[in-house]
Image (cartoon, rainbow, N blue to C red; front, side):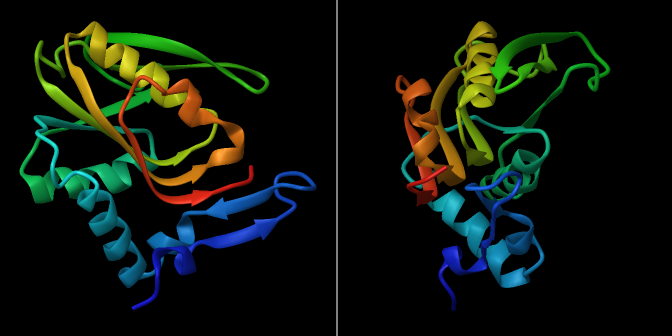
Length: 174
């Protein structure tokens, strides 16, 4: 079987010159790659006591739901503002050009629950930092954050320094 890195398609000079885009869709489009990615993410949780799996829109859903299913845990989606039907809480964060807001249902995390956040990629860390703040606002405890891929050159791990962060693949650049 191939290593997970071999399933990632790297596209040079996208979206701009000097950037290497790490394409997760090449993992999703291969049954073995998808299976391996989910297994490797789940492996990062083998010694973690967790009550709830949280995933960010949209690729955090793709990887988080099968892990939640395999562990027989509930899954909580965190979505872009305006996409959830019930009462929500929100957190905003800065992007390279502007800001964004994410939301989750106010009743999705109960005080004292141990929560794992799963996402496909950590770049600057802003999205997941906003997610962690909402979970804590609801009384949950973020016990681990797992990413399939990490772009270490963007220093997102520094923004999440107070959390237990794991990544399956780490690329040194941006």
